[in-house]
Length: 228
Image 1 (tube, one colour):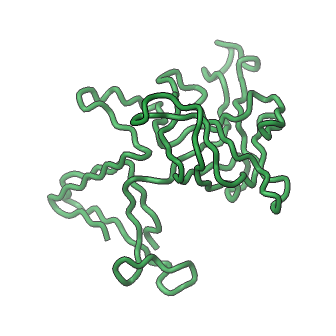
Image 2: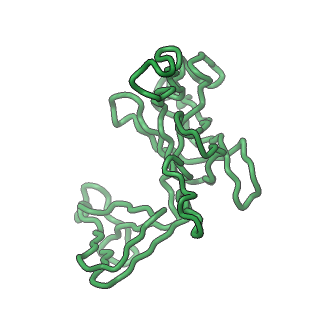
């Protein structure tokens, strides 16, 4: 159990997947900025078919057969479509990080978890390098929308009920790995939580923040197999 009680303070700041404001000017953190925790899939050029990118009408394709494993392995990411600023330059993820590619249909099971193999299209020095192209270790199993639906021709400026220029139905690509992880364990110190179906597998750790605590700040932290 992770507990914060009367008068206590808990501050956890993980670097991976987090974006922090300038301490001298907190307003520098734009609420429209997706930061380093997630981005949008942007592999397909508009709604144009491109077999080299395994795209068909703006959809990044998964496996043609579950046994082939021939789904797309290269992902290009971008920021939200209607964001004016700041400019999206890429993400600071690393090889072996785990990411999630969300479903873009009606089946939640089509959300996929993948492991990064390598990154490309990078800018900046090594200490603060950001990249837009991600190669994953195994091909996607399901199709994922990877293009923006342009509204400019459908709703001329000033004529519609919205000021949006596009509908962003692209899959979100989010970082799962974190530099700080709170993970449930087994009955013995250092032992992992039992596998599903085994004894005590349904009882994970708990986070308790009690009345009267002084301060709790948590950012860039992974909570895994918590609760019951």
